Amino acid sequence: MWIQDIKLYNFRNYFYESVNFNESTNIFIGDNAQGKTNLLESCYYLANATSFKKLRDKDIIKFGQEKMEISGTIRKGRSFKKVLIRVDGTDKNIFVNEVEYKRNKDLKSLFRLVLFTPEDLNIIKEGPNLRRELLDEIIASIDFSYARVKKDYDKILFARNKLLKNRNSSYFKEQLDAFDKSLVKEGYKIYKSRIKFVKFVEEYAQDFQNALTDGKEKLEIDYLPDISAESLDEYYKKFLEKREDDLRYLSTQAGVHRDDIIIKINGKNTRLFASQGQQRSAIINIKLAEVKLVRQISGDRAVILLDDVFSELDETRSKFLLENLSDYQTIITATNTKSLENVPADKISYISDGRIRKEKYDRKQQL
Image 1: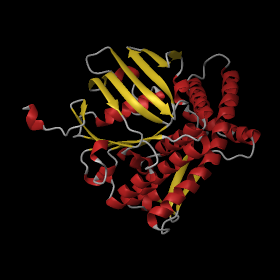
Image 2: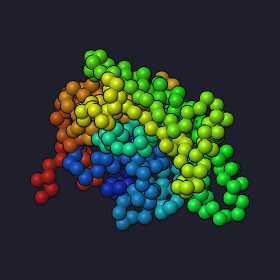
Image 3: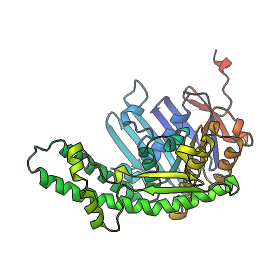
Image 4: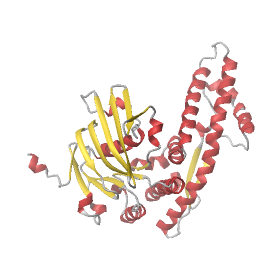
C-alpha cells in the first residue's frame, strides 16, 4: 500500500502544490523552514485527518486563508482509493471515492503510516507521557479498536477529575462510583493490550538491535503498569485503594494514565546510562519493530515518513535504517544528500518557499 500522489491547497506554507510519489524511495531536499516537514505532515493528515503536531485543524490552514484542502490517491495493487479532506474554519469533511466519512477513525483503516523524527529521542529523555504515547501509537496502528478504547478512557478520566474538584455536587458518591466502574473497565482493556504488545515489540526490536550491533547489545522493554492484576475484579479493587488519595489531591492517582515503560540496553536504563547514539538506535529499532508488526499482523506495508532523521545519525545507523526500509515506500526529508549519496537522482526533489520541483533550487536565479 502506498501514496501515489497528493495535492495541497492552502495547507501550511503551500498555496497549491501537487506531488507524484514513486512506490519506493522519495527524497525531498531543502533548507529549514521551507516546507519539508509540512509535506510529511500532509501525508500524515491524509491518513489520519489529524496533525502529528497535535494542532487544531484551523491552525494548519495557510496564514491569511479560511479553508484548505488535501487530496490524494492511495494504491494497493491494482486497486486505489481517492481521499479528499476539506477544512473550512471549524468544519471538516472527509471523502473516500466520493463517499463521505463522518469520523476520523474511519479513515485510519485505509492505510498505515510510521513516522520517524529527530524529536523521537525525547521519548527516552523526557517523562513517561511520551513513552506511553509511543506504546499507544504502536498498538493503535495494529489494533484499530484500541484507539477507541483509549479515547473513551481519556474522556471518562477527564470527567472523573472534574467531579473530584467539585465534591459539593449532588449525588457525588453515586457519580464517582459510576465513573470508577467505567474507567476501570476501559483501563483494564488498555492494560491487557499493553502487556501483550510490549512483548511483540521487544522481540522484534531486539532482532534489529542484534543486527545493528553484531549481537553486542541486548535491547529490552519493561512495561511498568501502575496497577498489576490478574483479573478485572482485582484491578478494580486495587484502583479503589487509591480513592482517599484521589480525594486529597483532587485527581485520579491510579490507572493506565500513570503507566511507564523502561527501555534498556544490556540491562541498563537508556535514559540514565546510554549514549545519545545508543538512545537513537533504541528508538529507531522500536519504530522498525512497529513497521514489521504492522506488516505481519495486517499484511499491509506501512508508508514510512522520515523527517530530517539522517542529520542526527552516523553513517552506520543511516545505512542500517535505509536497508531495513528498502521494501517500503519511504518519504524522506533532509537538508542535503550527504547521507543519501547512493540514491538515484530521479528519486530526489527539492523544496523551497512552499514549492516542490525536480531540479535543484538555485537561490541566485531568484535574485
